Image 1 (cartoon, rainbow, N blue to C red):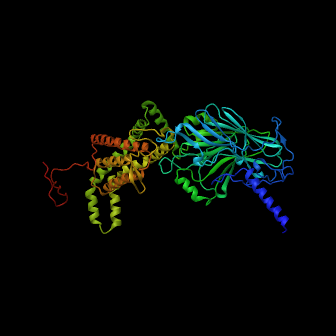
Image 2 (spheres, rainbow, N blue to C red):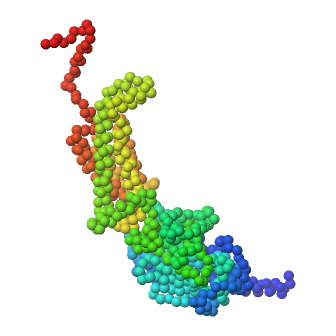
Image 3 (spheres, one colour):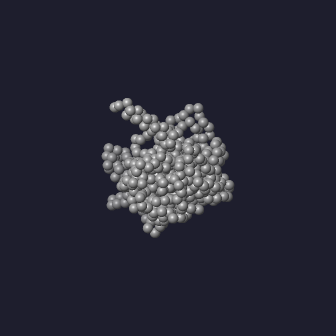
Length: 620
């Protein structure tokens, strides 16, 4: 290589370095971010002469779009190409329910705060639903994958701004521009995003664009009983336009990095109490839903650390993939708010109530929530509302409990009555277990005794399991209970956390929760007050139930304090109910463990047998 050639190469290298540093828009490097995607849709690229060798907006090289002929938006005036501004500009919009911060960098929604909700009892700042601190990475970013254009990395120009809206614009080339307008109404938790494609855009080559939501939203810190990991949610549309039942799936690594779903009415990210939902407006044909995340094993340690820090671990964007058609309406409604039934009922047009996942026992959760709201309107206290709900549930279950108690005590009487015969059978056939079992069963059948009926107490507990599960779900999804105080409890959706201990206990943590201990003590007292039986099976049942109550104390240690209030009040009511039932049964002549047979005052002399050759009683 001669000297002049070397100098020319050196100058070219220096110019390229200078060009990249001065003119190229720096790319953000963040885990789970929007890296440029090389044709993930599988659309065939056709290189067009009008884009070869040209520089696109933001200096992102184009691979061609095949748009030499295209449809022109006659309603918009095509202006000269917009050069990317050097300075990133932020715009704030607010309506009292939503505080938004938007950035010209990518025309992204970077921060969303909800002034009516607080971060925590200690931190009274407005709750952040999206923010850099949550690694949200911005919402409503645009991409054109077939052209390898990631417009969420381009610094757009703010061409219009007022109190309730902002309009961003960027140029693709000399003949095509993209406009992104975001409007926040005067009230409500829903904004409007509108995308316009100005200039010559051809639809013959099926160019598609994507609009994607944020990667992460705020959720209640992990490790609490009411919290569950963030989920993505999507609702499909029926042929008649109605909305099918929404699908809720956990946020986690995605095989292949993304999923596609067709005929979707809306989709987004949701957490315990809040949601980010995007839905197309206008035409029924809306393209396909895109769920994009990270493949298993990619930055897994970092995402696990995010989760340990109280953030959503794996990143996940939910949005739509649609054909670039300048004649179509590319408008979207974006819900950013609480999963409050009163709020969601105002969005019945897209069946927003489906954002609340009540679980399998939702048919019980809904009436429970309705009763809680009713009692709260009367007492002005959610704690008292929970106590009132407990009395209602116990009153409904009282006939079942009374029947079980009656049956259990009747069977205990029967077991006491046949105890001598059973002892005789055990002694007589102690070396023949098969015959002993057969004879015992015959005795049970002959005397009408069913030992299994003595386990009515356990049966009553198992009958309450659906109610317990429904209440757990109720306290998990009821945003009305979030950060509501009662007595020393700061938040009824969290453990009561009386004080923090200087050490941590395995599986229990470092907070001392008083309510689970009160629950165990009350239930054990209730067990002690139950009538004692001499039958070994009944004694084994009582021991098993006592052990179950202690085990439940450990299981419920980190459960919502509102749920523990229900358990404690229910156990206290059970003590009074037990006394009432025993009194009623005693009045009916049913005493537990006592056989209802006549006991003679002394041994009876058997009558002499009658027969031939034996003297009989002389007739008078």
